[in-house]
Image (cartoon, rainbow, N blue to C red; front, side, top):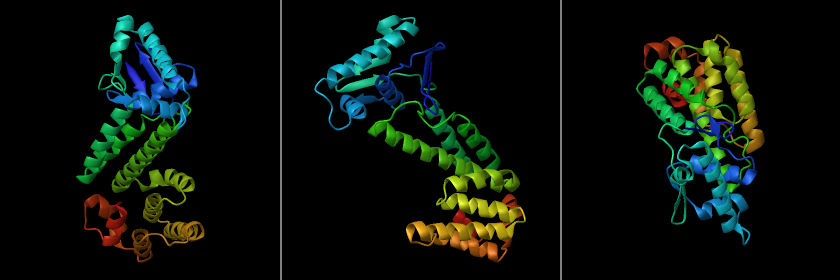
Length: 276
């Protein structure tokens, strides 16, 4: 069995899809998969489906959706309805979808991200880059892109977007430590356009440009970021990226790719941006 949420909702038993076509049952299945092997309360499911004002028939309608999901499972499972009821079990106050530990792509993504962070913390940049790249490859689109989100799924979607972005930033950091500054330039340029107030991405782009012999453009990235911060927030960027700007102005040797690859001591400004 597979259950994928990092893109369209895709739940299959022996290759047979058990995803309903109707929007509300899809919401129920999406929430159950995201919390696989944990009880999802009836109140949480009702809030996802109808917000803060569920209709009087909400409990009965939810039971109908659960029955629909069980029928889809039963059609795909050799054990039929008894096995479907075991897999999608009723508990006091809620329901639990029982899935194998390796069935959900989100679980695998989180495992790989944790391993990648550990590699990065130990200075094993190549292993970190490979592991985080494998984690990001699990994404096919935005999480649950084909499921209309209510209040709970929307929170989950935001959380997963942040997790994906964090993994991407860490993978780029690992690539920069490996001297792959030319390779990440176009990717970073697109990312800073998408996230114009993200200081980490701007810092990484500044460093990649500097290491590529494009110091003036690296300084231009900082000026543009500072203008955006002042215009939109009325603030200056953080001290961390200001110190990187000063390090680029001074052409500090610790910013060079060779310093990162050879493990030479970094300046405080370089350590603050987390890219050397």
